[in-house]
Image (cartoon, rainbow, N blue to C red; front, side, top):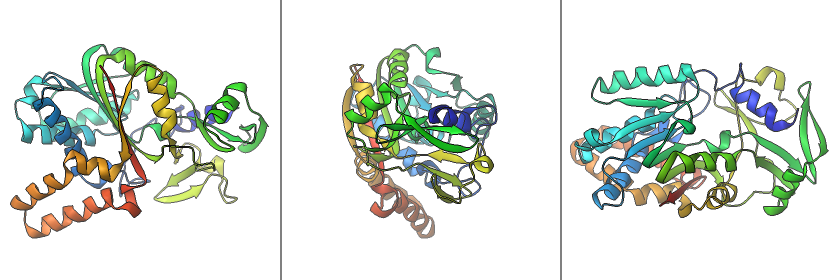
Length: 329
């Protein structure tokens, strides 16, 4: 089968990695910005609150997380929105797009534990179930989980009996490779269809997403496997695909030009593209930390400040992760 179908089955098939709820962080296979610090979500919520106060976003907006895992990011944002303007919890709605039933149950349980009956969590299986006048979409590390084709010099990968074989690339893959000046690397499959679904889900929207990658294709393979906080290059001779299939995460660096082009082709405006450190600081991260310092103990402040360093330090997450902000209407 072609590699994109193999990766789809690895991640989302009947025995796929994301088919069931899996822990993230110390007990899982990897860390994310969300699992690192609640200030990640608080910073995005601070930005959202500012735009509501400026009248740029309606007070009855629906806040939607796509690819929410247990719902930590959305919950952290709701917590800060309450601090910013408690009445927003009455005027806004909160939603998660999640296709896996087991994960939806975990999300409901987490929200019940964290908020009781104070917050109603809406869930939909797909963007097709949405029809909103305005939505603020947020996501973290979703574009790296789209299936991709592996491409090198006019050839694309197929998988047979857990072995990689190369055949002549399809015309679509070759055209995409040519468009982005690629000799070697990953070509994501599904960005265009995803952008189209987002467009139809809301008449107007802001879409803020974080992921690791760059504005341009890197010109080499970045595909890798994460398991128990160890990273294995996909083409490493020691990698046993049959043993890791569905039991570990498989991912690659995002070509943000491809993401942006997919949305711009639908008439969506690119508002901002920048590294994670710059985005979070612009969203108010440092201000939030200073507010926290005035009410927290010195030990707690230093503990949170250390976690925030992970989010913005250039040699950790600050430069490697990027933020893209897209807007319709």
